[in-house]
Length: 212
Image (cartoon, rainbow, N blue to C red; front, side, top):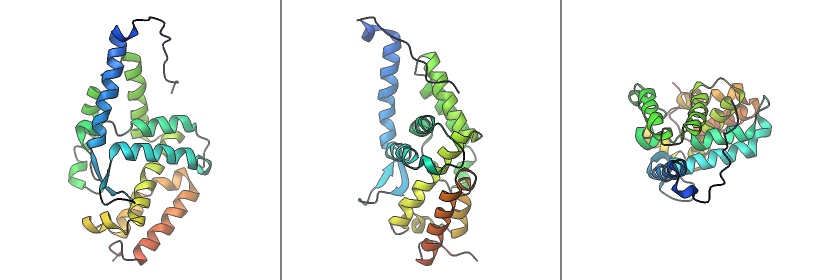
C-alpha cells in the first residue's frame, strides 16, 4: 500500500478551500468515537473504555512491541491501521467479540459506516484510509497480522488485570478466549505464548468459566 498522499498547500486562504473543510469535518466526526463504549474496563477506573482510547492504546502497543513480530513490519503502517480501524464504530457501534448474533451483520454495518465516514475526506485521502481499513479487515499482510494481534492482546490484558470483570459479566470461557487469541500465533510466537500463559493464570484464578 502506498504512503498517505500529501498535497503541498501554499494558498493563504486554505481554510476557505473545500479540501480543508472536508478534512476538518472528518476530524470533528472522529470525536464521536470517544462516545462508543467497549466491554473492557479501564485498569484505574470503574468505567468501560471507549473505542478512541482503545485505538490509541493499541497503536502505542504496536510501537512498543514491534520487535516481537515474527515477520518484518512497517510499524508506522501498523500504527496508522490501528488508529483508524475502529472509526467505523461511530455508525456501526462496537460489536462485542463474543456476540455471535451481532457478528452476523457486522461486516455489512461496518462497510456502510466506512462508506460514509471515510467518504467525508477528499477523494485520495478517502481511498488511502479505506484501503488501510480494508487491509486490516482482510488480515493478509504482515502489518495487518500484527495489527490484529495487538488488537486482541490488549483486551486480554485489560480483562486479566481487572480481575476478569468483563469476562465474568458475560460468562466467557477459557476456550472462547483461547480461540479469540489465535491470530497471535501466526503474527508473534512470543506474544502467543504470553497470551496462553495469561489465559492459564486467569483460569486458575477463577476469572473464566473452565473448559468442560
